[in-house]
Each structure stands twice: as C-alpha cells, then as structure tokens.
Length: 515
Image (cartoon, rainbow, N blue to C red; front, top):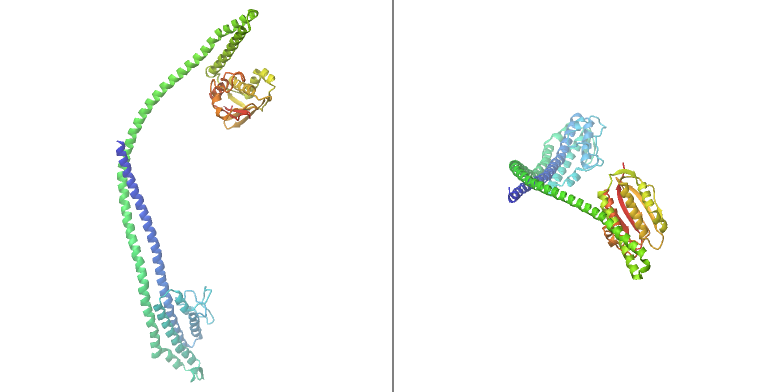
C-alpha cells in the first residue's frame, strides 16, 4: 500500500469520525432543546390545571354555601350554619385556607366547634388569588362578576338563616323585627325560583371564563406539545441515522483497519529489515572501532615504552658529557647541555603520563569494593613530600565504601590534590575534601583556595595536552586532568569543575556506591 492510499484511508476515517461527532452533538442539542420545552410544557400544564382549580373554588364555594343553607333550613342543625360562615370567611380572606381547599371536606366536619386543618401561614382572599394567578383582564372581569353575583346570593341565604331564627327585615332592610321562626319561608327562600335563577346566573360568567381560559392555556400547551413532538421525531430520525452510521462505520472501519494493519505490517517488515542491516553494519563498525581503539592503545603503550630506552640513553650520556668535560666547556655549551637534559626529563615525564593515560583502560583492574579512605591515604602517601614542601592543609571527612579500581581512584585523588597544590595562590594551599551520598552514587569534591579557572576553560582543561599556563610558571604536561576524566568515566561517573578566576576551584566527581 502506498503512502497516498494510506492518506486517503485516513481522510475517510476522519470524515466518518467527524460525522459521528456531528451526530452526537446534534443528538445532545436536540435532547437538551426537547428537555427544556418538555419542562415548559409541564409548567404550562400545571398553570392550566391550577387556573381551573382556582376558578373552580368560586363555583365550589357557592355550591357549598347553597348546600349548607339548605341543610340548615331543613334540619336546623347549627353545624351547617357554622360551616356556611367559615366558607365565607375563607373566601374573603378572614380565615386561613384549609389544606386541599379545592376538595370537598365539609361532610367530614361533624364537630360544631372544629376548624378545617391548614398549613397556610396567611389568610388570603379569593379575589387576591385571582390577581396573582396571571389571568387576563377579560378573564378577571368574568371571575369578579361571578363572585359579585355569589355575594348577592349570600343576601338571600342570610335572609333564610334569619327566618329560621325569627328575624325579619324592617323598612330599612335591617333584621330588627322579631317574630316566630318561619321555617316554611326559610325553605322557600333557598328553593324558590328567584334563588335558582340567581344561582344559575353565577355559572354563566364562570362558564364563559372557562371557555376563555381553555382557549388561552390550550394554545400554549398545544404549542409546547407540538415542539416536543417535533423534537421526539427529530431524535428518532437522528438515532436511526446514528445507528446506520455506526453500522456503516463498523463495516467500513473493519475494512480500513485490515488495510492499515497490512500496510503497517509491510512497513514494519521493511523497517525491520533495514534495522537488521543497520544493526549488522553497526556491529561491524563497532568491532572495527574496538579493534582500532585497541590497536591505538597498544600502539601508544608500545611507542611510549620503546621510547623509554633511547630517551634514557640520551639523558644519561648528556649528563655524563657534562660531568667529564665540564671544565673544558664554555658557558653556552653548558647551557646547551642543560637544555638537552631538561628536554629529556620533560620528554620522560610526558611519556610516563601517556603510559598512565593508555593504561586506564588497558591495565585497569577488575572492580571491587573498598574503603575510599584507603585510596585517599595512598594518594597522600605518594605526594607526602609535595604536601610538606607546600605546607598544604588538607581537611576531609570519613569516606564510605565504593566499588571500583582502588589503584586508579588513588591516582585520581593524587592528580586532583597535586593540581590544587601546583595552581595555588600566594597563600599556602588549603584543600577541603567533601563527600555526599546521593541515591546509588556518591559525590566527592576537592576544593582549593588557588588561582581559579575562567569559566570559558571549564571543559577545555579535561582534554589531553591542554594547558592554560606556561611551563615557566606552572609545570605539567596537560595530561593529568584528562587521566582523571578517563578514570571517572571508566567507573561510570562524571567529573566537572566549579570555579571563578581568582576564587579557587572545586573539582567534583561521582562514583558508584558499594553494596
């Protein structure tokens, strides 16, 4: 499979994934939209139901008043009279509204002194509830009209109560005339044609109110129901489309997946073959590099070793020449002999240092555990005379156990302490050796109060034959710190310097801990 075809497959998969994501987003939006309108529909239905119940309280209270006054006119039981006036007080907001007032509870109130149970904290008139219910102006006028007619009917009902008690109206319309109770008249008042017409008249505005309320609230409910139905249809369509898309994705995705897997297998096989060839070539080059390195190290060792003998002969015969013919040579000749001897000695030192550098890897011993303090003491013993002559002060702490080549670590300490003495300032050398354990290794630092090193030379000083000072001011071959780095790297550690010119130097290196 070519890369172009793979890109085409990727684009197709991305398109399918994009469509899936789009469908999921549409489903989420549609669901949220439908849910919100479902809540609006529920609220509209609740308002519609509450409006009917509230309007029905006027009709129910009027019927309750009629029922109570008729029962009283027949039975004379004051229970009905008490309940009659309780209904009036509740409707006018003079008494707390009972729980579930829209239900008929009066037949259960058999105690003459009982008050219907209520959790309402405040008393509120029915017409006030009408104003708070959000009815239209036209609807409110109809309700007020019905309530007014009901209040006028109450006058007849009160007249029936008074007739039962022998109280009749005077010329001013006040119940001041006392006679014998007229039960027949009381019954005739609440069952007569005038009362029945007035009663029927109350229902006319109520029924008209129901008609207006039904049109208004039904329109709002129908609107939300229509939206919810459309949302449901949209959800069904989207779910069906999503299902189809999922089936399509499963079918095509499997096909694309197999094609991509085959392509990747081919690519892996090609890369594996290339890697195998590269690995083989790398192994061959590594072998050649190891062989070349071994040959170079062997050459350096042999060359340095073979140079020792002729160099000793030059040095010996030059010294012999000076001793035997010193009285016959003039001063320039003596100076020439001195230069030759000095050069031979420096060459001898350089060869020895080269031998030490090559022996770090060729003559290194197997690693073993030892006390780092032993290597430190060996180093001090090797340069004891140099320490004494320079009056160097060396402070140290107890060292832990490490794993490595004790001979090479001795050489490492020896080179760093010698370096601190050689590059001292006008003051006597003060050298502080510290050791800190960090995880699986230890960090050793050798700090001095010497002349310091410019920061730009911090890396250069660890390279072979690199010197920062002339032989006239500071002796050396430029190999000592290179040997230190090679020893530390053989032990799997790192070495670096922290220094500023004129402020002394701190050479730090790490070594693996012992078990």
